[in-house]
Image (cartoon, rainbow, N blue to C red; front, side, top):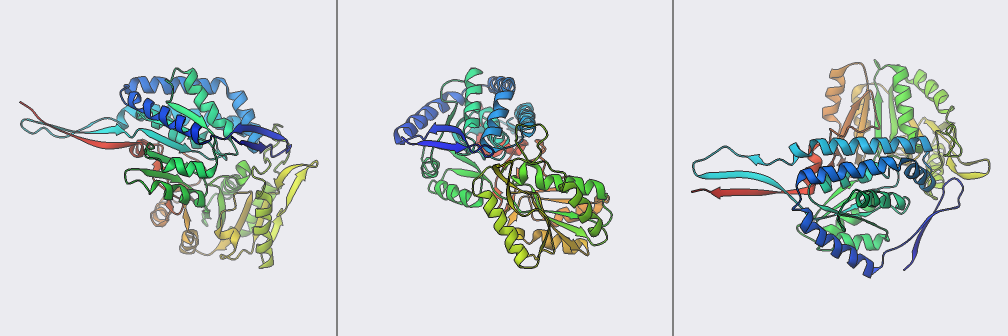
Length: 461
């Protein structure tokens, strides 16, 4: 049995080491999950909700240790790691609160001598593969509604954030969950694909790259009765209309591009600004991006941490170099760097004079890089924002609600924001268009993919 070893993106020292599950270990996990699924389906919703509430309380009680682990494994500034724990708990409690209504039977109008209803039945074993960039949020989106729905969860976290899966499993165990209900483990990509194709697995939820999603989806396609929920990449556009509040637009879009070092599927990766505001927007964005503090992610002053993945700085640098070779200008940044001789950072980067066919405009950057493009009209902005193979979110910055509503109808994305970006409301489904994914998490719709409809058709008397 080999080990998974990851480094600390700031110190480059070993951050975590865990054994990878071999074939025998995977068999034990699947057998335990299958056995636990039978009893989980028989528990009441009230029991499941109470268990989930206790598990979240255990996570909150261990917040300091969990935040430290996140920061050590993927470089997120410590204060942002603490914010993620609070966000995770908020999402979980919302899903607990709406579960009764979302999972309630649909009772059809009475007919003489008949009882007819539609019930939501558990699927059984849910295989969840969350991402490292928001390791708690991408996990909780599935773990809590899956358990509330009467399923069991096999939790294989990203190899960049393995300890987060263990924290969820430990919290459920401490909360009194029966063996096999929530199991965390570690394995390589090939093993993940084999598990996804195993007949004992009833649903697969994957958060990650488009290519990773394709491979997982191909594995599930070998089984007729199994589906997959995929939350993949984004190349999200923001449009600043001529009537926008300039200060709020600059603050929101720069934060949307640079928070978590831009390592977010819904980060702002393309900004389209009306020509009337373009010069002032660029000037203000430049000044704001200059204020970012790179450094030790455990230092409270740091608000831009290192890049989690070893190949990320070189990838971003290549995108910027290509853009500059084709006539773009980097008004700020554009290079991989270190702070005090430590870490793998990428400078906050502002690009202008950017052509629409450049890699930085078409391929997900996943870093603190903001290309800004002037546009002359709503229609031009709409066409450019839709000119992408990805479709996760888009944001419209305007004082005109009707303008935002009109553009929202035409934007081919999962979520459209007005005067905000890079945020989730658990009452709304997190969903996507095009190659950014399929299915939905959160909201009442988040329960639909984790259950199946069963028709009850009783003839009475």
